[in-house]
Image (cartoon, rainbow, N blue to C red):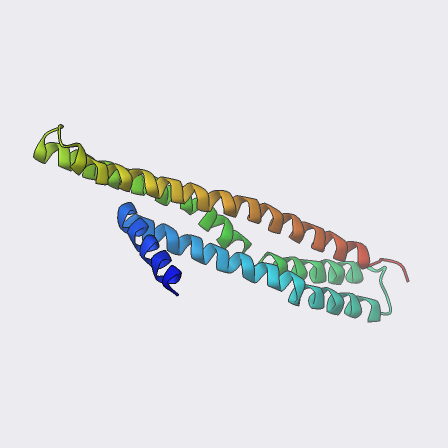
Length: 175
């Protein structure tokens, strides 16, 4: 159990070194990952059930060739696509926000360095070190969050495209 308290202390120290912006980056990454996991679970459960439901409704129609049937098919595919794409734009926004928050942390850390230099002169390296860490740690955290998010949002977007195309292909126009 001691390892858990040591890990918590290390996280607390890391957050203190990075300044208040690092906490904001952490919450942003946490929210991004919650939404990513939700989408992955939904793709395995709800989206598959929805695809079966849409296919069943389409196949139960007696007529598939008229103009009206084509509009109904397009509507079903559109609703399926909207359901599959829920939260994807929010995840993309959070991914884009991570490096911007890191940049904000860099700027606030550098302001702290310049304040130390203005107050104590340019020779106090120890005082400047905390400002430099507050400048670099949020940048690193923002980039790590963005990189992990970019990879997964690409996978999620491709999965959505595959699922929608698969549904389109399964809703045949014959009969």
